[in-house]
Image (cartoon, rainbow, N blue to C red; front, side, top):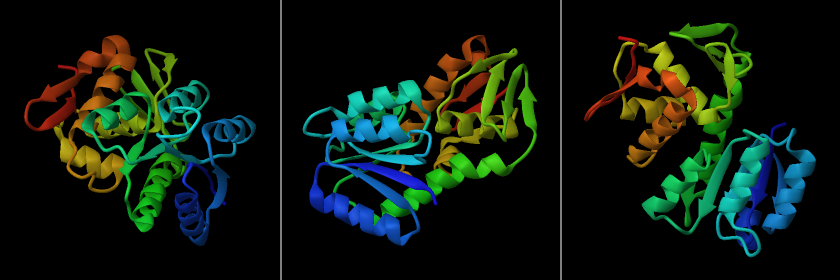
Length: 225
């Protein structure tokens, strides 16, 4: 049974999410503030499969909590908030968030997103083998990436984007395809989500960042030429 940590200060929202998630077969840990959420994470981070994290917590900022989580773990994090400004979304992705939903939302939609994230994050672990291109090697089973033999740390979404580009090397991959293949649903047409993750991926690839070419108005491709 996959475990979900919900860090949310609104009691009604916590109860709704807990009910829907448990009805879909997930084990749910509930934290009503950031301090308790951090304690749960520190004690159970190896067992937690995904975190639903509210930004507007009464004690610790959701942004600060996300930074702390990313220092220790690559566990998928879905930000839940009443704030829907574009800047907030981009900041969340830059800090390592995997998804972002704005209140009010449908609990069924949240569950669908959780399923999509978990499927893409952990489902691939059942595959075997490695894929390599121009010194960039990804191990699908362990979800590890090396550049010229040196391991680099990627978030789940960065890994999935890189795999998509390698699987389609020398071909143009549209932003829409990236959203559909990596996020697994229509992300409200927010194509800047892809751009933000590509920017982060390039930074982590170091000298190999030049392999990711921008095809203006369309998307990206991985090409050594």
